[in-house]
Amino acid sequence: MCGRYAATKDPAALIEEFAAIDLTEGRARVDHNVAPTKNVVTVVQRHPRDAEGDVLEDEPAVRSLRLMRWGLVPFWAKDIKVGFANINAKAEGIDTKPAFREAFARRRCLIPFDCFYEWKKLGKDREPYAVGLADRKLMALAGLWETWRSPAGERVRSFAIVTTAANDLLAPIHDRMPVILAPGNWPVWLGERPADPQELKSLLVPYPADDIAVWPVDKRVGNVNNKDPALIEPAAVA
Image (cartoon, rainbow, N blue to C red; front, side, top):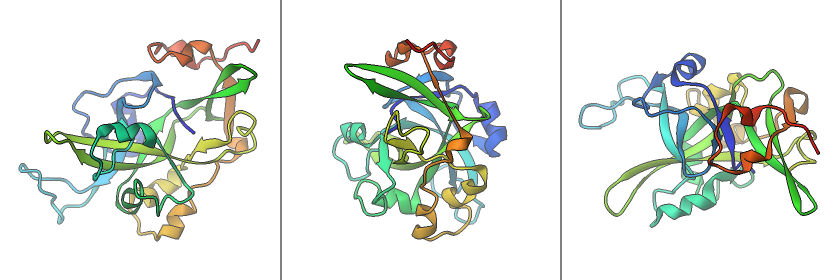
């Protein structure tokens, strides 16, 4: 599972990292404690549109930064609240589950951030940990996205983070982890290079334990109103 994370890079850094254009309209914000339903930066690869919003199929597709709501709302859903159940998409069966199969086939994205938070159960208590790359570089997670229209006509773009079984380092804390994609796999996942479903699913595996770092953090991270940079700093374990 992945239910909280830190995203500390501004759009300028993400534009350089992903060779993308910025379509966030200045609304992207650094957040050290991102929670579901928040609008956050994703990376997608889409064809540009004209002034009327029609897709320009003859123009080359480009990577772009877009704000999306965390918690995928399928296009056929009647209520946006469905997104609460779809913050994560299990890799197992991702190509057959009704909520995700269309997005898996046609609308895949990357979610950039620095680390995610996970809680280890200790009796009646829970100890929070941050999980990041061993070199502390930016992570890009595999995601799926959809566009939903409310009964009032509002268009909402939303996403889910793909999860898989935890690697050996993370397993003592939680049995699931988000799918982290190495830069060499970004083009395949974004659809920049053709790939069949089996090749796509082959990417949805645990990230190597040797390339991951886990460290305890302050329990203040449990309150979504706390968003200061100190949240991702190592904390002493009682």
